[in-house]
Image (tube, rainbow, N blue to C red; front, side, top):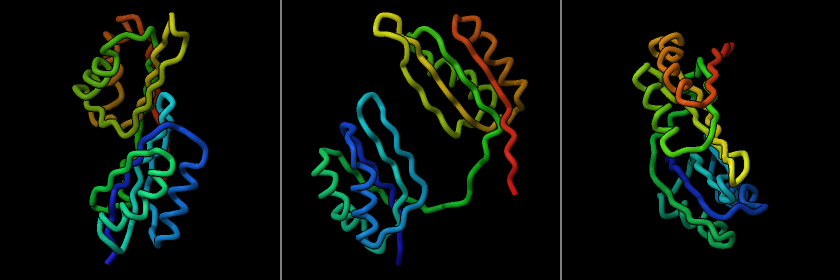
Length: 173
């Protein structure tokens, strides 16, 4: 019986990480589900759903040689493999301004209280070391409507950051 697992890999970014781990999993008879792979500050992280006939230890045994060879930390957790149950985001929010502690907590806090269900969040630090700029991209579902989010973000925009909010029109067919 096939089971779903969440395989997480973290380590210094270098060429060949994705090819190495996906090749080993394919050779081991695994099927991949959804995945998120991204470079974060010189590191590379992978979170991927992996369907496998064996247990978590057997999957870890497939991933470990690649992970060890590339200097990655790896972890396997059993999960429910619920594919095709996506909530489609209906709003995209972008916040950027001078980097300071608490931006993410402030923005996500007001958005949560205004009914936003965050589906994706990415952030980056741009600018220069002496003038860093924090950039935050959020997508989600506006459970209480987009106007509630706009009102919630007004005080955030008054605190010295730029805020934009755009509805997402997604055709599902």
